[in-house]
Length: 155
Image 1 (cartoon, helix red, strand yellow):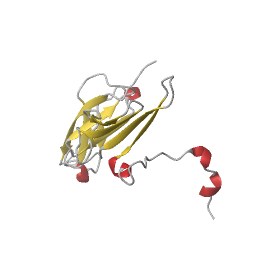
Image 2 (cartoon, helix red, strand yellow; image 1 turned 90 degrees about the vertical axis):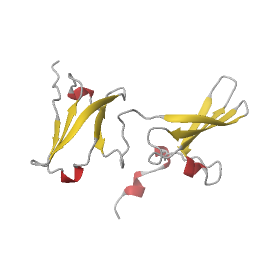
Image 3 (cartoon, one colour; image 1 turned 90 degrees about the horizontal axis):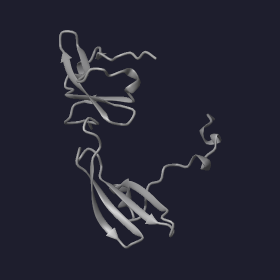
Image 4 (cartoon, one colour; image 1 turned 60 degrees about the vertical axis):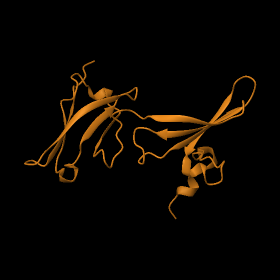
């Protein structure tokens, strides 16, 4: 199979993106592929160019670019520091503090509960603001089996 190599990504009419100062893509294993980013004023073009040769389109899962003072960058990966807050042998709670984008990415709470002697563990992760609502209100994504398409039909 022949793959197409990526030379660059050109974004036209990009005046509103002129202050972009980072760019990268995530590959299939969620590792960042770093790009050089530059704006050309005469053509109003933002160019994203892989820093390493040999990047093919099939490697790209997502591309992220922006201004590092306002936008979250994936280019160094996602990093949190875990601080153990509670440990009683069958329940552990950690506060996860963003080390990559403090103030942009919200801190998280992770709870681990031992369910049985075989080692089954329930894991729940939520934002600190959701957790602090009543101390144990963990956000759970909607379960599709609890919904029917009738709720989404136009009236």
